[in-house]
Every structure is written in structure tokens, then in C-alpha cells.
Image (cartoon, rainbow, N blue to C red; front, side):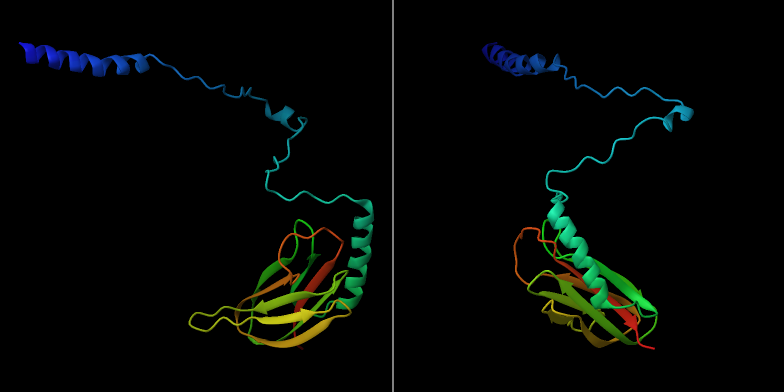
Length: 189
């Protein structure tokens, strides 16, 4: 009889905390969504995407933006007219919160291609251009740019994909100065 009481007391001790939490209810506020007729949806303002805390903020210093616009104009002159056919063409900022850039394009046919790159407003930059092939060692062409003019190189490409990445050679976050760069890959006639 004594053991029975101990077992009953033990079971009750286990049930008391469980019964205390069984009555708990958690309520979270749900956003209220009222259906809107389709004809009114066009007149309603839409909210843009919510920026994340880690997303880079756009730069809005008028002097830097004007300098960047002048640098883009000079970059266009350095890269020259777009030769035909252009396989890959990309321009963008070299510093600031979104420094460097890259692009990948499909190479429709094997052959000789010209890579032309330039930068303006920085002391230098690097461009990496290449392809990956299964079983072959990965060796992209890396061109060092001095930002005084354009640099060109002839490259033999296979059918597949080619990438081009342009970055400042120094690591870390840098202040936005308006420096820009560009790269073009075109098939040789």
C-alpha cells in the first residue's frame, strides 16, 4: 500500500506541471487583410521591398554622383564604339558599398575573342576573364589595369560560358569615390 501511494504521488507530481501548461494559449497578432476589389487595386499605392539591414545603401552625395557620371562618359570613350558582335558588356562602380562587378554570358561558338577593359577614377583595378571546363584546370586571364587607358587582349574561347569580373585589387570596404570600370568581350571578325 505504501508503494502505491508513492507511485500515485509521483504521478501527480508529474501531472501538475503538465496541467499548468495545458491551459496556456499563445496569441500572436496577425496582420488584418481586407480583400480589395480588382478595379481598386490599380489605384492603391504599392509598397516597395523592405531593405534588409545588411543591404548596401545607395550613395547620394551630389559631388560624387556628378564625378561618377563624368567618369562613365570618359569610360565610354576609352572602351570605344561597340564592335560587332559583342558577346559581353558590363560597366559599374569600382568602390563604395557595391564595389566591383561581374557578368557571365554564353559563348555561341568557339573562336578568338577580344577582351577590352578600362577604369577611370581609381589608381588601378583587375579584371579576370575565363571559362570553366570539366576536367581542365581553372586558369582565368587576369589583367592589371592602370586606369590611364584601355587594355585589350585576344583570348581563345570554347563554346560554353565566359565570365568577366572587375574589381579593385585591394581588399576591404572602401569609400565611394566615383571610380568606375568596364569590360567588353567581342568576337574577332
